[in-house]
Image (tube, rainbow, N blue to C red; front, side, top):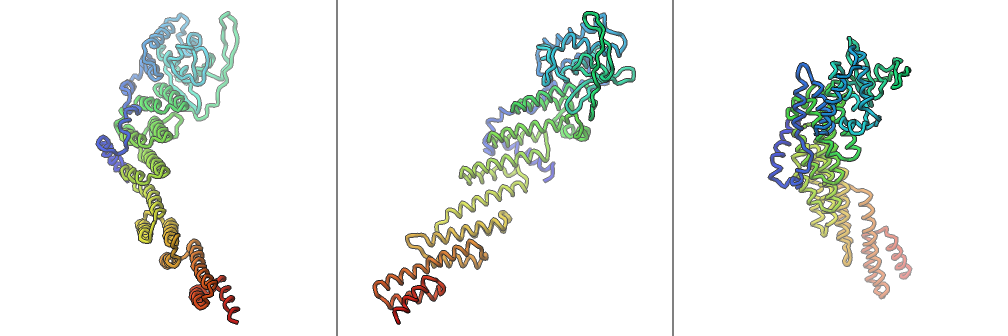
Length: 504
């Protein structure tokens, strides 16, 4: 099925959800994470398209919003911080010195303690704790307010800033108050007027990647998402990923936007691809539902989310897993009829190959159940015919068909030979016909040996009973009849020796 055809089918099914007992969990859909982006995300995306980009006020507002802060108090603190910086009599005029002063100002007035996972800007104002992302974002805002242009830089596990001054790009390690242009020996003066030197070594930033200011802010989302998922709070991570993606890509209802070539080409870059990351979050939430045995809800989620955020590989895989897991649980609970109904109800969600795979599992289960419940020859023959038909239709492979036919034949033969009136001859005949139709195998051969031995033993018992009654002629007749059918049976040959000794 092509990608367009798949999503057309999914769309039609989504329309039918409200009118069908399809998956049985629609009443819980309201508990799902939201799929629409926060309007602010789209607003911030539009602001970034202007020629002059974002103002420092907008960067501050966006960074607080990305941090989850909707209050006005921290925005006021940022305004006060900017005012104190730009009104400082110590603020140098030179761009390079100004950029270095801003780093010192930030550490002297705001930043207190490094904390690896403290990525939120609002929290910095609460306790002074920061990491590479939150400190870089605040430094970027202050630089923007002071007329200094910056970009973000990321590596595999770190973030910092580049300042663009006098046609130079200077690295700034914002986690260190002496991190301006790392690798250079820097003179400093402490609060008591003493002079000293510090040296922040330049890092071997292999695989470094320059990113935009808004992309740097988006890492706040990524770190918050990672923290939530580490705590198994997958539902809460989804809206953050949606907002991040909308902030960076715009209107997510547009298939063209969601599949933008620019983002596709960045899949191997260090910067986390918004579309790929969003799909990871959506799929991870679905997988968390599966781990809780909530397959029906997983299907509703997959259908709803895949229409808005399509992917022709990963959604069908999640859907297949959900249907498979539910079917397995039905089978484990000995409810094959419900398993079949579940598969057929959800058939249109599955690719032809996936449906065939699950259908084969159910066909196998259904035929095995029928074989286990055989009560007479007619039922046995019906089951065997159904197995052959399933093989002919490609719903059962040849090897499994042989195994099930063998089981059905033996089950039927066991019914014929069951007490209190075992018919060993009919059981043998049924097995011999099976060998003629399907060929022999070890199970058939073993069963025939057993049944033939039992029938021969029946001749022996009849012979012995008449012989003990001294009905020698009748005993001889029974023995001859048995030997005619089983000439090599040891017990009957032993009986023959008894008769011959008697006749001497």
